[in-house]
Amino acid sequence: MAEYMEKSEQQKKRAYSPAVITQGGKTVWLAGQTATQDEQGNDIAGNFEAQVRTIFSLMDKTLKRAGGSLANMVTMTVFITDPRLGDKFVEMRAGFFPSGNFPASALITISHLARPGMLIEIQGIAVIGG
Image 1: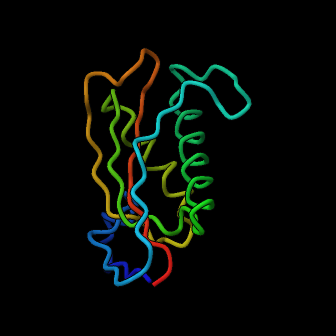
Image 2: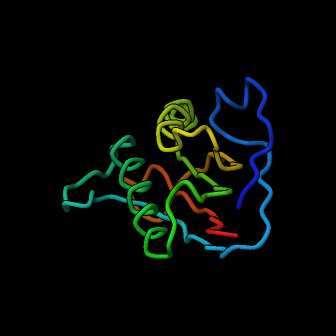
């Protein structure tokens, strides 16, 4: 079970928790996830919003295979190629955690990802049960 520390108003607006405390449970270390095609095989290279939706969907499916869901995410590291996309990401991330129990998070701007057209990569850790 995860305990999400109380968030300041700024942390709530930015959709992250200052810390998440866990004890027991199964820890799932998620590899960095990117997407230049959506789950139907459509090209989403250069489409930030479509990449974010696809990445969160793929992460949720991986966590479901492990017995959990996105709700079990306790931390994530997010890499974006354009700092102007940061606010859009925060807005979108809030929608994937409707309970308000946001993962602890880092949002880092980098110059490039592994392939052209990739605008975002997310890796994370989830704790299921406990």
